Image 1 (cartoon, rainbow, N blue to C red):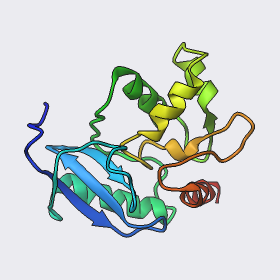
Image 2: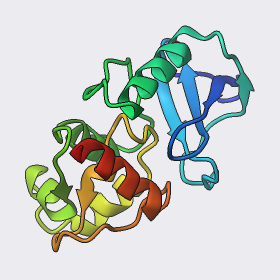
Image 3: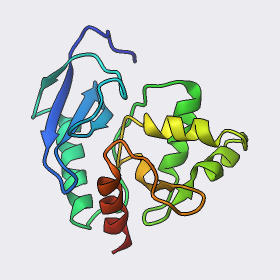
Length: 165
C-alpha cells in the first residue's frame, strides 16, 4: 500500500540514551526512526503530524525502551522500507545481523552477490530509514573501525556497547 505523499504521516518522539528519536508510521507499519538532528534529505518523507496514540508508534516505543534497558535483543514490528531495490536489499541484510555482532560493508556486498559494491552498500546503509531496528550501527569498516553513522559516532559506539554487555 503506497500512501499519498501529501497525507501527513503519524509520528511520535521518544527520549533515549542516544537522544530524542522520531518514530514515523505509515498505516500499520513503521517507516522511519529518525535522529534528533537528522538531515531531512537523508530519509525523504511527506509531512508528519504528532500522533502519540498510534498503535505502531506506541509498540515501537515500547520495544525500543526494552532494547535500551537490555531486555530486548530482537524487534517484532511491521516495517515498510521506502527506497530503491538495492537499498531495500541492503536493509534486509541489516536485519539479518545478529544482536551483539557486526558485519562490514564488503561482507554485505558479497552477500548480495555484488562484491565490488562496498561503497554502494555504505551509501545505502547511511540512508537506512529505520535506524536501530534495522541495525545499521552493526556495520563497521573492514578493519574493525567505527565508521560514519547518521546518529553520530558516539551514538553508534553507545549502541554497540549496549549490545556487548
